[in-house]
Length: 129
Length: 308
Image 1 (cartoon, one colour):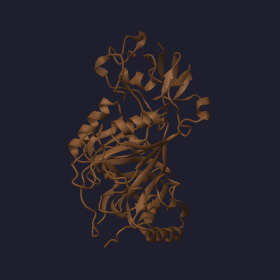
Image 2: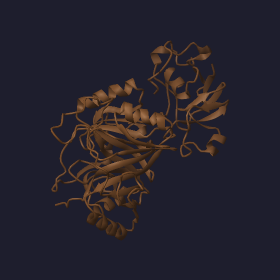
Image 3: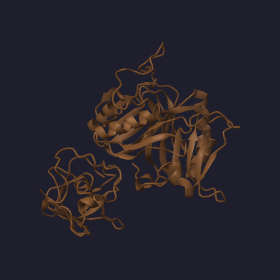
Image 4: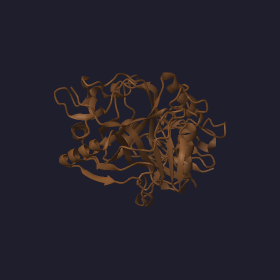
């Protein structure tokens, strides 16, 4: 499964099949700046530094323009990694750990080697934020 | 003393959605609206407790607001609004019966905030699910949340003071509550305006031009709000905030998003009646968070940043 590296922290998360960036990060107990979580507002855009993503649903041009796509702007609530990717959070945003008890050593990036996140349950994840 | 407005209510919301079938599932199965008409790329829906043909038009392609329709009492009122809107300097245009499905002739206004509002006097009357003769309290076959009717909308505008003046001077809306910079500097940050006795039929806050913050459905009470929240969890609907209460309007609420990211609200509790002698309630901007989310008393990021 594709691995996501999140800059500037350098945290790694392993994604599930067809899982969006937002869901993968939420499953790993990580929070960052998001809005509607459904591709409508553009608040959760991140910079795609390396790798490829696809969009499972149509995205409004008013939310993510062709120019932005060319510049590597990525709508994280709808983007599904196709390869290992590296993303960088927006300026001023930061990664927050909401499952601190699961990763008591906060210097250990969750999800490294695919063993970190508490993700035993497959299927619909309703806690995406 | 205020003057009665000849505007009756928010009659329809015309919205863009990125995926029509996902939107159908949300508005019909999760919220419980009925699809009353469909054509390629469009769905028309209504709630069980609404009398006219439809209250929501969903159009596939993009996201956000196309326009609102507000129902008006009669043609004289339309002509009067047209004259006053032109005097105010607002772009007006007439539209003919049939341009909007089942809607009669009307007047189209482009607000200084770039929102389109259509005023009309007639939409085909189709009746509610429970009818007008010895009605039951509610229909037994209601789905999901079972929203009663579309109640109000909140939009974002660059100049709330200007829009408040327009809605008051041209359409006779009354300001029930407003948010001002401070008592000494009463610059308008947001305004909740009423055309009848409901605390708001249209509200607006400072923000980008032409955008939608949310439109809201009326529910019966607080327990219906809680039940709606349960259904949102069952159906994986992203909740923005709630269940909680607004300080402004005293309504109980959940903000949530449709599958395209348009914000919806379920809203209950007629906190008070806006009668002709109702004085405007003022909130200072330092208390805005309490005014919006009465319990949390702090705004989430999304409230002031997520618009479609």
